[in-house]
Length: 171
Image (tube, rainbow, N blue to C red; front, side):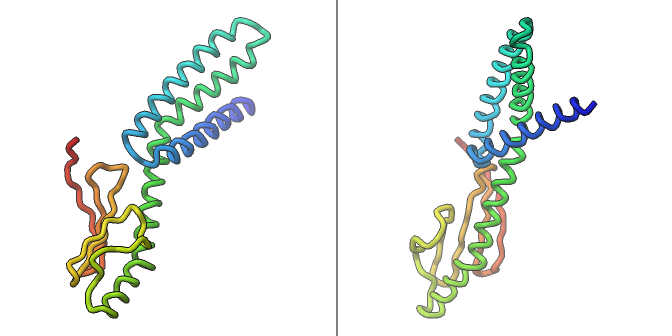
């Protein structure tokens, strides 16, 4: 019984590690995640076939069993990558919102106090993910969710709040 539990824990641990790696590589972009999942399924199939070919010989049976275990971990990691990728995107959006609230918006308010208007363009101090628009009286900062096509989070200086919009994506 302990051997089975250990086997399951090893498979789940390997799947979780591969899912985190997949999320780090694909970074929540849906098309990249689908490519990662396709590669994972292909690799799992290749590992299972190899494991099956190694089973008849006593000398290679243990290695074949380990390859089968690896195949299961790779196969389980494919859907877990979607969950981990979504978590990575949420973390990034949280970091951007925190940056805007603690650093960028206060700096823009100081600029407005000093000059009377918000700057027309942002300097390089802003994150590359942000889109900035200003008419001088108000400004908006927008960031696109890479995991969901068309979802944009926008901070408005007029309301001092974030709002999310969903618009269809046409390729």
